[in-house]
Image 1: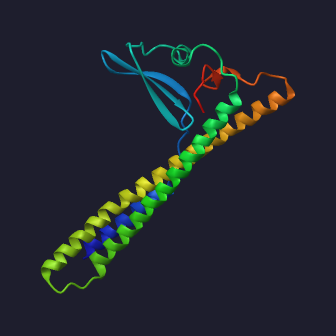
Image 2 (image 1 turned 120 degrees about the vertical axis):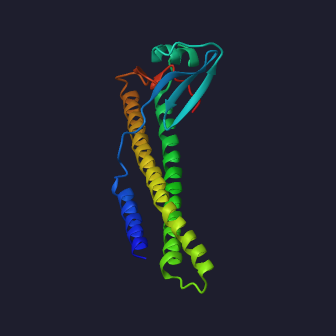
Image 3 (image 1 turned 180 degrees about the horizontal axis):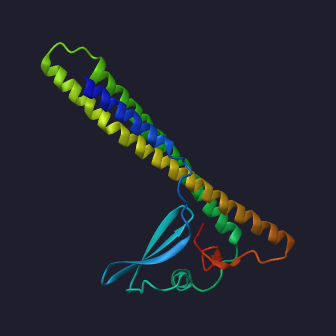
Length: 207
């Protein structure tokens, strides 16, 4: 029984460490485009924008060292987008939706972990079994729940952490959209971003 108590203490410590990692840990995804090759005859161009990645299959094998501008031109043509505000707002909205879903899913997983840890603790330490067979079965199931629950906490906290990063990324897109709105109102700069790949130049993404 002493060893079981030590194991429960380990589970609680592991769970506490899962929550000790701040939800803002790490950096948000960055906008990028790159080539990935799945065979000698097939390539995909991956476009990571907002909080998602699109994989576009290509008919020919592409050089992985092609610059971003060349890849974007292959996908969307060489004409600049007419409205960076709409692009950035679309990315911000997609990040907000993604972040909300990830956060909800993360708390659901953590709730499942709490339920498993509680049930495992009850089955292992607090149930008085009448027979040896039921005791072995009950405590085996309880210990199994206690083993699984820390990983549930870890998965849930990871999802919440990821949601936090994507929420921050969405805020940055929103701020860029607002800056371009102000520039458009003041007519001191074009409403498209001609210097940042993925921020207006070539990026007609259908948002």
